[in-house]
Amino acid sequence: MKGSRALFIGRFQPFHNGHLATAKRILEKHGEVIIGIGSAQYSHTGENPFTAAERFEMIQRALDAEGIRNYHIIPIPDTHVHSVWVGHVLSLIPKFDAVYTNSALVIRLFKERGINVVSLPMIAREDLSGTEVRKRMFSDGDWEALVPRSVAAYIREIDGLQRIKETYRYATPYGTRQNSDE
Image 1: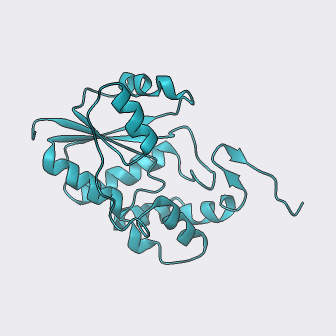
Image 2: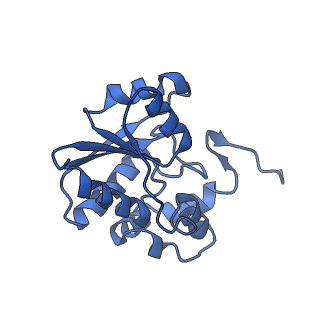
């Protein structure tokens, strides 16, 4: 299937070593990978601190640093209507042969449309999750070991650490709630 193309969807908040390893595993089976940046319209919240453009930059820098060239990165905004979401995704990206995801909802939605879905075993899921990386960033923990060097450098370049500290306490996926101390 080396001439084929696969879709890898995630929020990549931020792009971490597990994402990089997954992209490499996909490319062992497929000639190209399309990386779909999900929830592209969200940023500056605890769960979604980085913009789609910033996530694009993180992914591009990480893949380029590894010498990977056979990829496309496409932002995918949410529709909030699950029954039409796959059609929305299909309208935004080039043809592909398989979807790689571990999201139960995404698996179901693509399978209902008759699209081949592959679920890869997660790598060190306890540590390699966007939630864990953000948690460590917020609490001054060792987060840099969990992301590619180029991503850590970029997060520092855009002052992403401070952004997480400012938004993590009061943010929700869709906006900011009031401080309970006020």
